[in-house]
Every structure is written in structure tokens, then in C-alpha cells.
Length: 65
Image (tube, rainbow, N blue to C red; front, side, top):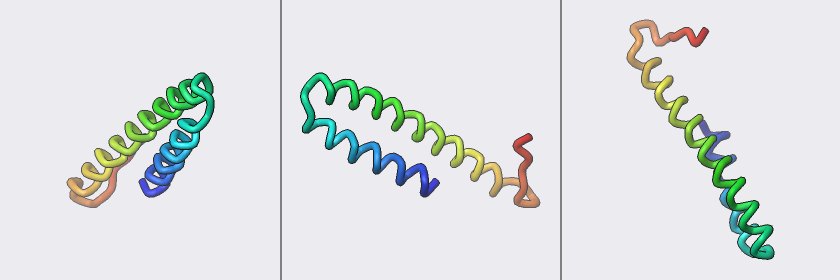
């Protein structure tokens, strides 16, 4: 989860730099970065759900296969 948070921070920094670029380039980069952020946020949510399941299981184990 920490790696995902770091990825989001990198994407946000890239969006800031894209804002300083020409409008056409900035818009294309911003859209692509927004999609990446949405993807990693979904991954983060899924990991949080798995973590909750892990804590609820009696032996603190779950099988993802």
C-alpha cells in the first residue's frame, strides 16, 4: 500500500508539471495521469478489503487462489 501511495504522489507531481506545459500536452497528460490515479486508488481499496478479511479470519490467513 505504501508503494501505491508513492505512485499516486508521483502521478500528482507529474500532473503539476503537465500543468506548466502547453495546453494540448497538459490536457493529454492530465487525462492519462487521472486514469492511472484511479487505477491505483482501486488497487488500494482492494488491498484494504483483503486486509480487513485477513484480520477477520480466525487464523489470520486467506487464500487468494
